[in-house]
Length: 249
Length: 249
Image (cartoon, rainbow over all chains, first blue to last red; front, side):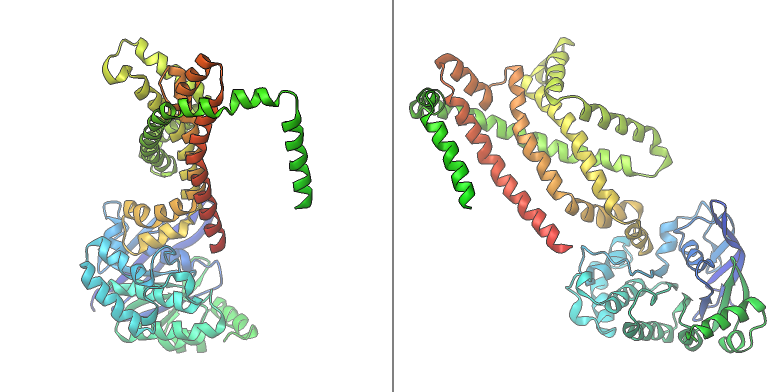
């Protein structure tokens, strides 16, 4: 079997006295999408932030293409350049145009020439229905458009994997569809992804695997059908039951 | 509107009909004294403008460096961080006129020669020290106002810490603090007159000498008009920027 793009082994992370990740293990193979589900505060965002080295882990290892990235000797900048991260609140740069938002990383990291980054940025913006908006500032866009810009920004530098942190949670319901469509398209192109989400229907449709996160560990992982239709663990059943009761399944 | 006219008209009437008014007019508003003193004061004012411009450049740079050190989180910079905090406390705490005295008369006592003993240079040093401390705090407030998620987002697209600061945090921070920065420069423009205590022949000093030799205070009015001619346009630019900033919210 080939080396997974991302492999997380025994990762532990606390904030003060609060243990958020508790010896967590998971692996994501190339071209695969794993959906992370679990209650708010179960550690989904923290896990993604730890993978992108935005948080330091207390214990365990994270591997990218078989190389450990959580060793102090590893330059975090070089790791982040190989990963794409999309935040729940978009976090676009408000003082830059849409196009500059998309090209900044590639241009400043030197991975592409300005010309090359601009061409690719334009092409991707056009593909995701934002071609007309490249000169606009982020605050002139709707939430859904902003999040698609954020997706394009993460995707533009050809990362090894995309980390999507609740990318639709801050959006009005009618804007969710276009964003999910963009994610689906990136997945169809073979992008490896970890998707933290509350969108169960979407998780079922796009993800190859669903991992249920509970109290800092992954208690159940498997195909969407297996985890959602016949969950093995009582915690998973309770979580799905609550979603069902809330009309979100 | 009508009440303003009545109040102002009443005051004017009171002023112009008072028994001392002809003397005041002669001592402070003599066209003759204005004509004879103005050319020299204007020439001296050019020195104020040059000192102001030189000090402003130093203050903009030094203030930014101090602010960056004070806001950095790097443990290696801890000792320098303490130093900059002390710097700000001291130079904001001492009256500017006292600082001009201490440096202007203190440094030459060390027996230094050349530019280091030059009153104009020493006065500029004193003003730079005082105003860098103020401006550093303004910058610091601006940097602190840029949300931490902007840095996360910049790091996530692959920027280094320095690039994140340079391309994402600082442009937003500086934009937000332009009004208070300009406000400090208006007060710097006036405080340049404090260097007169070292005997530097700038506008206020020249006007003062003129007034003392003729027993007519019109030259001081002439000097005041020159300061106003510079500070009022600055104040209007400041209003304009503040309104623009307000409109964006």
